[in-house]
Length: 113
Length: 115
Image (tube, rainbow over all chains, first blue to last red; front, top):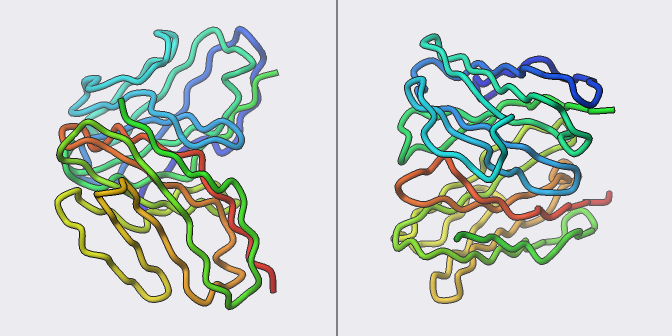
């Protein structure tokens, strides 16, 4: 058990809709990263939040956005869903943004029809 | 730019065999971190090991061992006396010193251990 939880476990949406995925980090972990893992591929970095501010972003369009809250929870929002957004979305938290190992949650499986 | 290559897409072994998973990386950072994760069918990425670039000592943990060779930019993972429970997808990942949360992952190696 990593102490990182995500909800929901599975989600089905249709193209054009918006979705919010949630993550609860380990207590004391002020850094959270989000990853997208398409089927058969490794996770790809979306962005990272440190103390409620975006602190690094991968090659994802602005319709991917996030929020981090003081209670160690965070959200990933995706607008105007596309079929290619279907993937496993993973969040990972860690205590120090530069040096600590990050620990992953179980992921949310998003299917866009 | 960083890159991680896991050339072995799938490996199948019989229980009790030893198996080595290869990982080759590219980075311009002089200080970096390397990781191995295990992903069982449930989907959660399970952290196995982190290695700092300035520490080239090999490491053994039970049936697991890791061989880090900076000269060849490789960080290989060996499972000794494999077991059916070792069946999973294994990922090698790399991150720079200044942003350890932005990891670059390989595409993974699917290991199947048959009884």
